[in-house]
Length: 202
Image (cartoon, rainbow, N blue to C red):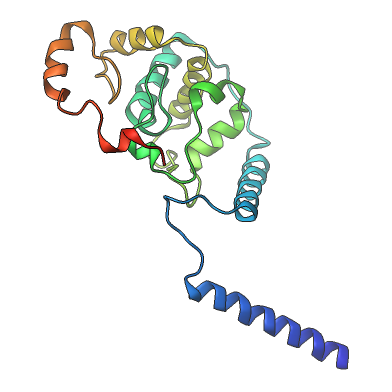
C-alpha cells in the first residue's frame, strides 16, 4: 500500500512541476529564437512519424504530364513561392521569419516521398506556417503542385521564368520581371533594393 501512495505522490509532484512550467512563461515561444535541442528533436520526430503513418497508404498517380505541370506551377507560384522560393527566387521576408523554417523545395522537393508531400499539402502542419490546402483545392490540383515541385528541383532559373511567362503569371517578389515589363517593374520597386528583412535571416 505504501508503494501505491508513493507512486501517487510522485505523480502528483510531476503534475505540479509540469503545470508550474506551463504557467510560468519560462519557455520562449518567440519565432525569432529556435527551439532548444531536446524540444526541436521531439517536435521533428513527432511530425515525421505522424506524416509517415498517415501517408503510408497514399498512392501517387502518374506525375509529370505537361498540362499537370502547368496547373501545378500556377498554384505553386500563387501560394508557395512566398515561403519556399523557386529556382532563382529566394523565399520572401515572411518565409525568412517563420519558425520552424520552411523547407527549401528547390533543393529538397525532388527527394521527398510524393505521398508524404501530398498529405502535408492537403492537411498542413499544426503550429507551423504550413496551411492545409485540402479545404480549398481538389486532390487533382494538389497532385499537380506535387508534380511541379518534383520537376522544379531540376529546373534552372531561366526555365522557371520561361514557364511563368508562358502561362501568363506575374513575377513573384524577388523574381526578375519579364523583359517587356522590366522598366516598369524597376520603377515601382527601385526604392526597395534591400529591405531590412533581407539583410538578416530569421
